Structures are given as C-alpha cells and as structure tokens.
Image 1: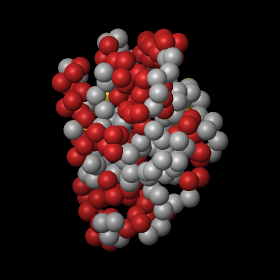
Image 2: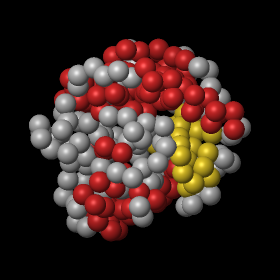
Image 3: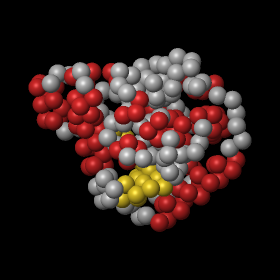
Image 4: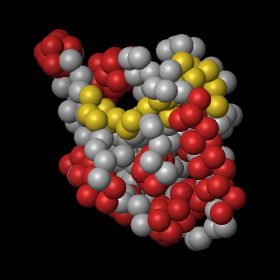
Length: 238
C-alpha cells in the first residue's frame, strides 16, 4: 500500500552498508558505468550514495519532452546539494514530430502498441544513446513496485544491450527508501507528496489513492502485467 513520504522508519543500517558496498564494487569492476535516473526517490537515493562516496558512476536522465515541471526541478536541487549534474538525453525531434503528425500527440491512449511506440521514441532510443560505450548500468527498480518486477535480481545481464545491469534497491521496501531519504536529507520530487509514488511522463501518470498498487498511476488504462516502457523488457520475460 502506498504511504509515500509518510512511511514509518525502518532499520536500514545493514541495507545501506550493502548498498554502498555493491555500488563501490560495481564502480571498481566497470570503468564505464552509469545510473539511469528517473529523478524519483529511489534514484535519488542512489545518487546520494554515488555523490557521498565519490564513485565514478555517471548519472543521466531522459527528458522525454513531456515530464512534469516538478520532475525537471529535481535536477537543479541535486546539483545544489551535491555539486554534481545530471546529464540529459532527449528524443530525436524528427521521430517525435512524425509520431505526432501521423498518429496524434496523445495516441498512446488508444492502444498499448501506440503507447509503446511513443515510449520507444521518447525513452528507449535516447537510453540507447545514453548507454553507448557503457559496460554496465544501474537502475532504481524495486521488486515491490510492480508485478513485472517481483523476481527482479540485484544483478543481471541485460541481453537487449549486451551489458551488465544492477538493481541495488531490488529488495528495498518503500519504507526503506523513505527512511533513507529522511536520514540523509535527499532532495525528492515534490509530486511524491501529492500521491505520486511512480512518476513518468505527465499524460501517462496520475496520483493514486490509499489501497492502490504503487504503480497504479502509470498507464492506468493498461493491464498491470504489461506495464513496462521498454527500458526494462527483461522484467516481462521473468
């Protein structure tokens, strides 16, 4: 059940130590490793560890062109606290224009296929460019986020991209995440305080109510078993 920032405190000492160890070892093992950040609370936890430990892990985010202003505002907040910037990657303008002109700006509401096509243009293709040359990448995914992530491992091989993939927070609960945020005073998206546990593009994200699944606000018109945008296709195969 989503309680967001109001989650009770948990004992995260062991998990923090394991997280710091994992990210430190990953940065040592791979000389080109990157955190793909959605600027959500989970990703900002990872950003905090990377910054505190001065790890050689670059951080990037995908500006789809349809993000909430509150999401965009997180990047300068992180820079103000840590002195580190988030590298932005944007979709190819021509691909966006073609989709809008031939299908419609909000055609993604019409079918899962059209939604995934839009995600492919605005997220998957920019991710491919962001990960060019990378030998590994890091995500803020958690097992408790969705049915498609229930079997999420801490480390896996991303066959789609031919590189290693780390999900350091795989076994963290939402309460763990918010305990860390409070303990380390991590900047977070203001939408988290307005009922948005999972935040994507503005037209594809809504607030949820008490009792709803934490990913219920993402592509709410679709079957929960297929709620992935294409960045993490391996989740659909597990």
